Length: 201
Image 1 (tube, rainbow, N blue to C red):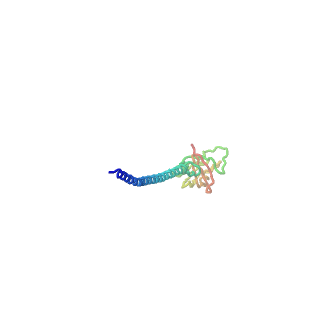
Image 2 (cartoon, rainbow, N blue to C red):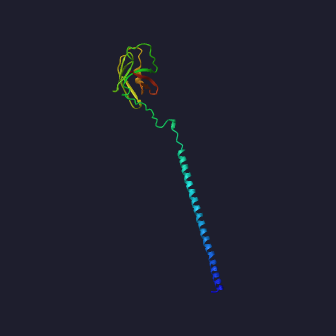
Image 3 (spheres, rainbow, N blue to C red):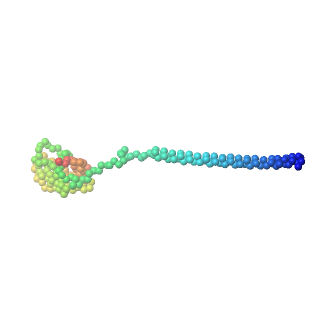
């Protein structure tokens, strides 16, 4: 082979090699462009995920804050929950059984003198009562209904004149009774308190 033929052959080889270079560069550019697009999509997805996580965190914080700051309804009357309300004692023949001395009787003012007898009332659970007005023995029957409804009937008695304590008049006029601790109160039909008695010890 002559030098001329060798040069021609080498030139052709170089030309063919040069012709393939743009194609390789084009492939490289395409690969680079694809990688950039993939990276950009990754950034977009990552950014969206971060926004979603932040939204969930803020929502959770808001719910937690609303839970801790919830306004509690006020307690009516300012009383503490669970405070028991005192229940009035039930009045019955059993609860009034015993001996009672007058503390105060409406319209009656005792004179400063001693009575021959102790002016007391004695109630029994069987619905009978006895006692004294200070001079005369007293006796009769009584009944107590719902809400302290009261009726009493007086039996026969002697009438010896003295500063008589009107125990019989209190019982026959009373329409309701109430008991608080060791105090027994009698009330008329209009709700007026007629008398108060203390339990004898």
